[in-house]
Image (tube, rainbow, N blue to C red; front, side, top):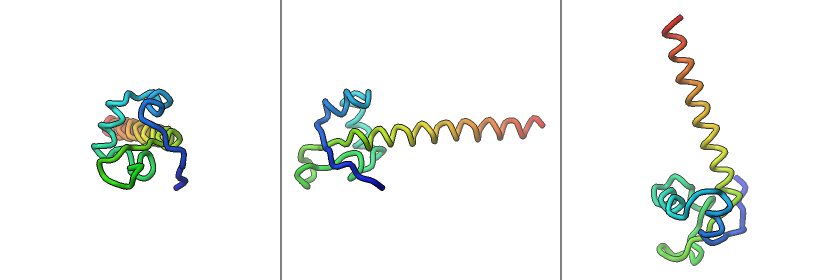
Length: 84
């Protein structure tokens, strides 16, 4: 895992990755965005301000897209096998 150490505020991260601040916060709270990789507590204290890694969020977006595409292909293969 390569970690980006360029932590930015939510407004800058939101604009750069095309995800609203609300959705970013929801992804963080639901543990879908990995802590320590996509976001950190800047003060090291829970409840403190968050820092966001644009590069890591973009990598996460790519990973999620590839996983969705693979899942779609797997589902299509399973349907094809029933009709053969």
